[in-house]
Length: 451
Image 1 (cartoon, rainbow, N blue to C red):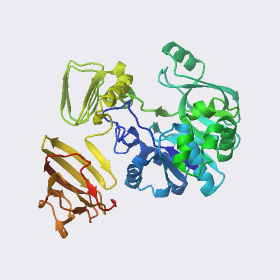
Image 2: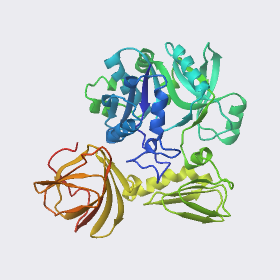
Image 3: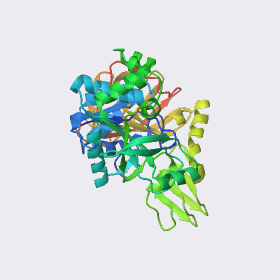
Image 4: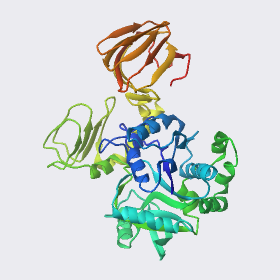
């Protein structure tokens, strides 16, 4: 079985933890693995590493590759399929299926979102085996058995019984509470956003029901194909129109982690029903979600969400957590980079965190991954002081090459070419102090590509 993992989502509802440059599939909220890494491990239950394809945005490629390496999943790098722009789920899935057909020919394909949380059990494994039997004739989706009425999910009404599931009677939008309550009583299922089908059936149904998507991908140039393709989900574009939709019930813990209130429901609680991550001191406070990088102290706070990401703090009622996306919209309208970028910024060679900044200085913590380097470069307006705090740095400054070990430092003047490399097998960490009249990230002249 082939698996397509969708990892191009931009996630605005978990700001300030999730940003456009670092969306929620890369977050490690619940343990030491990201949602993407947990999805990869689920995919490996039914697919070999070289049968797993990840469809993602071009700017996320290096993060996807790094998350694969962290769990030693051994998925080939050329199985990371890059979208030139986001056009919702149907073009992303079509592109993934097209690549699979070109490389491997006809096969059964499962489709998994990378930003959902699922606790695998025997029901999960049996449901996937049942769906595989249906996939030769149907476009199969998985319906989560609801444990309560929920207004944040779409629902599926099962219809005519099949040997391994049901035909889909209809898909319905997110309901109000009373309608959701009735749906649960009548046996409706939550729409999980997971699918399975044969590549052949999928392509045939796309040609028939979403020809504008299929015709767009007749273009050999992927960028042109995406320009032509409509922005449309697989639900609207295909599943709600086809007469070959089937659903397999899935009795498993599942969440789309779509809001901070969803995170509160998932996390373990203390004796006062507070869900806490980080250093927190609470007095007479109950039913809160508190996540912070620094000490957070609360007194008499109830039913609140408090999130400190280092460069931004969110405080809101748990009942209003769906409105977080409006904060992101306002920040974007103001041109505030904090809508998109964290204090920690990721690069193919590692990452850097802004510790402090003023008008004429900026202090960073830089992490360079093993065997990675920053290519030859220069700054016009700023000089830099480097202090190695962990590992060994191989440095070239103005043509002179040398090693810096823990506790050693060097100075890079403005206007001088330099190169920084981590030759070791452990991460290299450096404190960098920038001084100059202009400290913008666009003051970089690159003489070679990063490796």
